Image (spheres, rainbow, N blue to C red):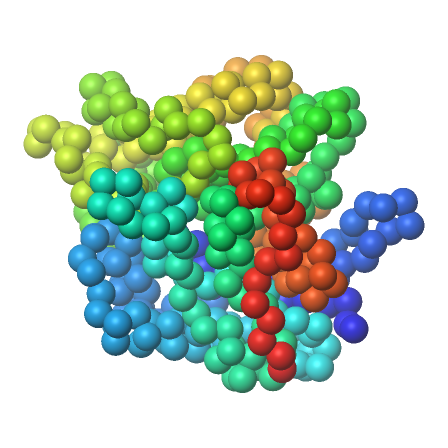
Length: 377
């Protein structure tokens, strides 16, 4: 089996499909080596991206035809990204042991919805069989549902990789993924159990607000937020959301934190920039609250994901957690833009080797589980 795996993921913001080709090696001392051979982000078709973002901001029901159509179109987009990545890396399909595809989350409700009797579920679209067919590479997909079936949240799934690559004895660390949703991995320096959970919005609300009011897909450099002032009353109303007080393990998505949720807290006299500044403060303060409650002696916060490139957000995180080192995973030799895609390459490897991909201490599942469905080449 080749030692190269290709990971694919598109986050909650649907701002591109991240592809990472990674070489993994199990060292003799039991640690893991991971080398990013190639990484790139490939654009969505604009019409499809707009459709995905719209679906994340509303609760309108789709027809079965809509779901089936999206499943195929998303798979084709992922397959195109995989094929381009393989070509751009000067490789061929035979060089890749497997593709690990996260897919695009349509709904994530691991707790169900008690008020209307919906059973716990998670749904990621992007047919793995079609990706395998169009790439000629074995594809592992649908990673989250097995963990949910075992009573877990199906998320986050990368803490095991974070622990393998970034844990160090004697220092309490945390890894913060700043995608559409923020999630934390807690790495205690005393060898205690790894924990991980979503904390709430990271970039998703800011991106959606910026797109609606400026036409830009994201707030480049945090400029819009920097032009505004935090509205303390609005921030308090947003922070009063009961989800933030739920204990870990917990996870969430765009179906909960969307612009309709923000607009329900507005009073009508806020400026666009002030709302953006307040949404940034919401991300920073809820992350700080969660980390302070769960691992108060954290010495180092290692950031990855698109939010690392927002200096206003990174500065706000540092101000919310004085005395803590807040830095990019780049300082540890891991490209922050490709950490998640690397994670799904690793999950594909775990599945092919028959190894668990989840951590029950993170997701709340009944035990370790081999994740995903394998679609042979």
